[in-house]
Length: 331
Ligand SMILES: Nc1nc2c(c(=O)[nH]1)N[C@H]1C(S)=C(S)[C@@H](COP(=O)(O)O)O[C@H]1N2
Ligand SMILES: [Mo]
Image (cartoon, rainbow, N blue to C red; front, side, top):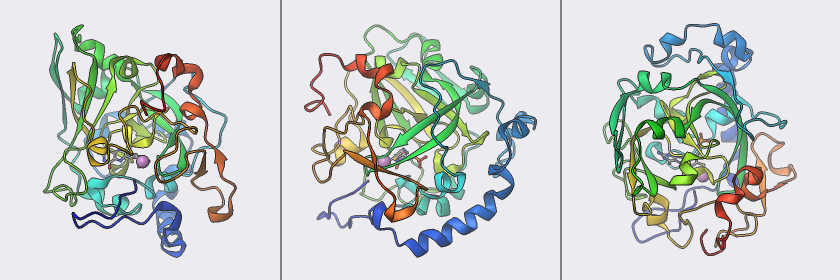
């Protein structure tokens, strides 16, 4: 995310495109070593391991048992982004503003014990221990693109299930029109919580029909492993047709509401980050074009930028959710 220089004392973070190449390459080299055993193995090899240990041994990345997804749009022929890129180039502002800060700092995140509360306008609100949440529905393999508003994208094999499986259990009332997501804000373990760069906790939201859409994923893993902390362990959202910032990491609370949620980025810069935040090549960010993107891992600075697709390529599945809306005004 890019910030303006403000009178609040925060400088604009280094844009991804001009991260010093030497720093980035050095970082990649050691991540490659770290990930060597894990990322190279086929998913099946990981699936054979003990899934029970998933949350019992923090720090390790044992397998998650997954089934193929039947959801339309859950697969892709595009090349999967390298594991070390996906885990070494992140936005997770609670752990710093630089792309390599989360990988360096997020080891302090305590993902066990972890509880997700689901409340608000629902007949059956509740609290789920992460171990129970994990077992609520079979975990599916889904390969989604993730496109950041900053103009880069990745292709990531996630493990999770449709958020709708959880939402339905809570039996939302007919008055519930939106779903709000609250993420962990723990000053003791997250160095940037308390900074004035955003309002904490990081809050995101979806309209009810967006939240119930089968492609909206509650993700627990990626590359057949438990989510690394920097990617939002132990549970995060992935909304593949929206800019990455809608995909809240390390969720602790899900709330049904009748009002459009005020999201962290919308509060920070309402003229730049609207509630809907659908990937839209025709609606420029006020300070840069959204027509193209750089696929992370594709040949560095000289790689040809790709054309950004409407709804990040998921239009066939989701465009009808926005029929009749003016997406230039409701961006
Ligand atoms: N809690 C929290 N969730 C967050 C963010 C954040 O700063 N804090 N950044 C968002 C942004 S801007 C992006 S692009 C994605 C990045 O996800 P990734 O690091 O797994 O690629 O996470 C999103 N979820
Ligand atoms: Mo982002």
